[in-house]
Length: 111
Image 1 (cartoon, helix red, strand yellow):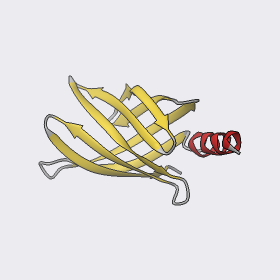
Image 2 (tube, one colour):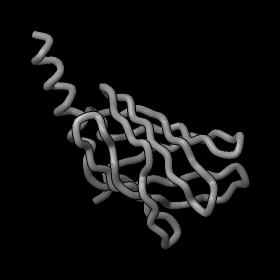
Image 3 (tube, rainbow, N blue to C red):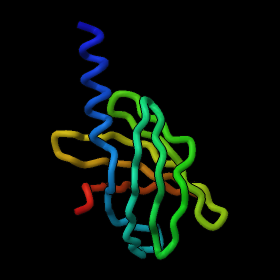
Image 4 (cartoon, helix red, strand yellow):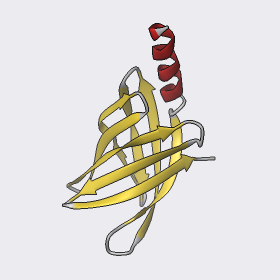
């Protein structure tokens, strides 16, 4: 029974692989369209973030159950991301932390 639950959880997270898009609302009121490309390998998450014409790699990516965490560094600033993958709604909710600020980001599967 436990093995079946583990395989089911791994299958759900594997569904997170692919492209996801959302809009980051910065504390200064600016909005930035973002596209993440995720690849899941066991509990490791890798991929890239495309934003404003630049592509940066995802660092320190991990998945555990439906919990997701990773960081990206853009122009010397590291943005840590922690959140949840919701397979039923095909969305990812992330809390993004940077320079003492926090913001919420909702990603939907990109077409």
